[in-house]
Image 1 (cartoon, helix red, strand yellow):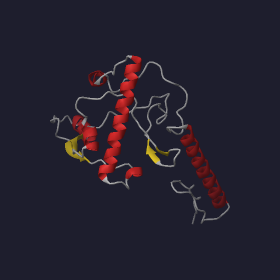
Image 2: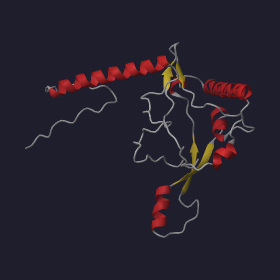
Image 3: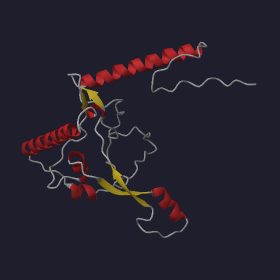
Length: 213
């Protein structure tokens, strides 16, 4: 459970603009039901479930050490010799249900999680049988340097939204369009002198001009 190595943007790559650095979004399906986006693609079924999956589907505690790299860095600058766990804290990670599953009993949302995992395993098995390929494997993945970068990268800008369907992406675009329109309308009112202009939730209203004494 040690923190992953930080991602560093290069001089020609703005922070946050890297391809692949996005979080799964909760979106609406065509039936109007909230569904968690599946962040996995092709993984093989391990002989023993990883700790994170066991914590998710079997309610086992997920414990590990959190390494305080800031304090370690300061200690090295002081010339201090320290043990590996001197600036580490034993932590327990408690997994909560996704927002779209919060209304479900614990055994129900854990059952849905098991179903998603089973779908991933079935899709991967079908893909391997169809293509004759094999998973890279945990050992090969762990042998890669965490800061490895591919020789060639896509230069097109990352999309504003990641969604599992074109319909969901259109819904997100429409919601963003309405948000921008409401913000601009409120900004125009504020510019005209209306100090009570209501801005949409989650926005940052423009600062008012300085009033001198």
